[in-house]
Image (cartoon, rainbow, N blue to C red):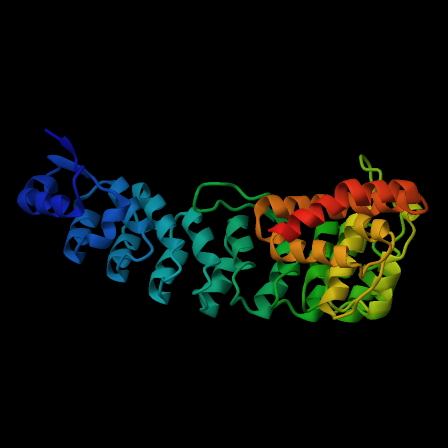
Length: 398
């Protein structure tokens, strides 16, 4: 008769129980429920015993612990039964696996195990990766395209795939479906001639990933910057290889392409230009200096604050009358009160979650408000005396 035993005291109590009742456990008269935090305290002998005679849940618990001895993981990986499939899949996520265990998992009969093994960063054997790249299951082939060690030749062969793939993480959550070509397009080992082929792909997601690939040459990025999809242009605008002449054009990204269901999403292209460390100072200054009427929505002011941050990183100070409420109300970017507010922002507000949220809100809408305050001295005086001065004095007291 089987008895389920729940040891609620400690790992040592569990080991003592196993020592006293090992024969009965082997016969299946007892099943033991163990806690994950006990694994580190178990002896290797206890772990091996549980791997042999414990339940599937015991094996899953042991397999999920990152510091489980390799000898135990090797034993579990070689139990090829169907009921042990999930145990092997869990093992495949372990970042410490050696080549021999990965080879065992890569040749597993169940594709759910092969999918995880194929993208493991420790799997580097060319013959194994090549075999997996020809697997009958598309998810396995797609997983090879995620392996950091995959060769250029294998990526080239995967670049002609017409199927999509989907992955399940350790927690059982499904990733969005994605074409295998798009995975190849963003891999850093993909050769330039393959990127050139994918840059002309009919799927805009593939072109978008080519545009974001750090190895995409500047000439290719120059062509992709003219793509009709804003998301492709956005990735070009953020790529460090994009030529300065192209960044200059993208800073003036046209609204001539409409997107169904959205009035205007092209500000993301300009945001990417504003954040690109290679964007010239003159272009950033020009972006900040655009009048408020230049854009369709106040959300576009976000990129202008990003351009200002980029200038700060370059060590360039730039006075922008229409970007900050405090600057407009005090009449100067270098006013003492404005400096106090900036210091408080950098030293205190930026260190807390609520502070960061306020900063994000402020830099989203303040340029638009500041533009409305320009040329209205009475309102500026009221805001300065009854709002800003009170805040500055409060900061100085603390």
